[in-house]
Length: 273
Image 1 (cartoon, rainbow, N blue to C red):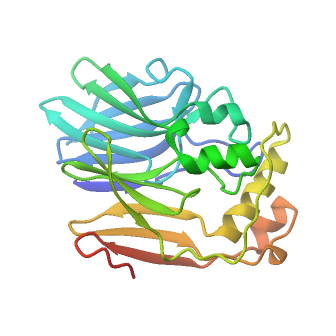
Image 2: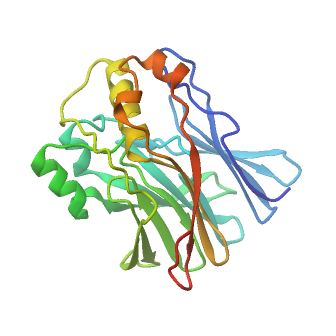
């Protein structure tokens, strides 16, 4: 088999729902199949092209203070040489929730070098600190959180990285040295609704889910990002008026039906459609 697989299973949204341990699959050049497992310990399980188990790489020790973000487009793998791979993973903090200002003192993405034969992480580089992002810094200053999640959607090309955050509604393109090369401001998300909340510690999980759902559906949050040979394909929620979104999470799950829209960026011309 070859190609990519996403969302074979995923964690539950509601409180006390069972979390799946399988979050993402990625098949690199038909040589290995990678399964990112997130549970008490985050692991990268590796299978060969016959789907025989090869080994398991512990990521929790390498990502101390963080855990992989369980969303589509948040895992990419790039071959360096035989049995050595770069693993790119979007991050969440194990210490703070995303409503706390201290969350944004950290990083949003990890770049790991793994040795398949030894089942080890050989190197870890934390990338894209929130402290470098002007949108985050302004939001912290204004005490206004207007996004659902701060973790990036991304994909990788031969020598560039394509990164999107919901809080700045733009596709950022980085070179191999992670210096910003160009920006494509999104023309598709022009939501007339701006819903936000303050930064603070939220103890009640359901309260957090309600707030995040209302922000997600009213602001036009991204669902997935995929890089083609010339185009970047993005799927997002078409914004819904806030008054149509209930204040109860169970009612949101039952009654809110968002329209999912495809957006495409032509990387050669910059045209968006």
